[in-house]
Image 1 (tube, rainbow, N blue to C red):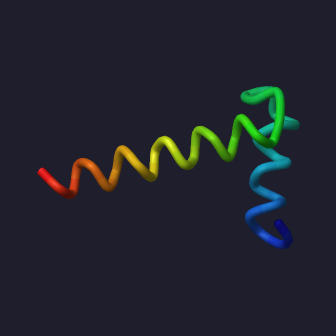
Image 2 (cartoon, rainbow, N blue to C red; image 1 turned 120 degrees about the vertical axis):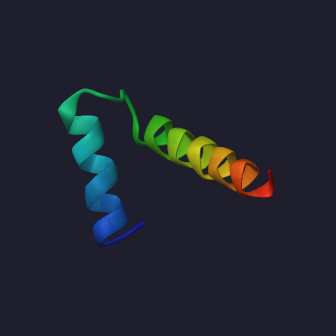
Length: 41
């Protein structure tokens, strides 16, 4: 990742909300999936 996405992920890790970049990406994908599921209803 480069640019804004990378910066955002790094900020979340540095803030202490997440331990690793993988956790940030995993949570983002989970939320994206949940959002898509809501649109199907």
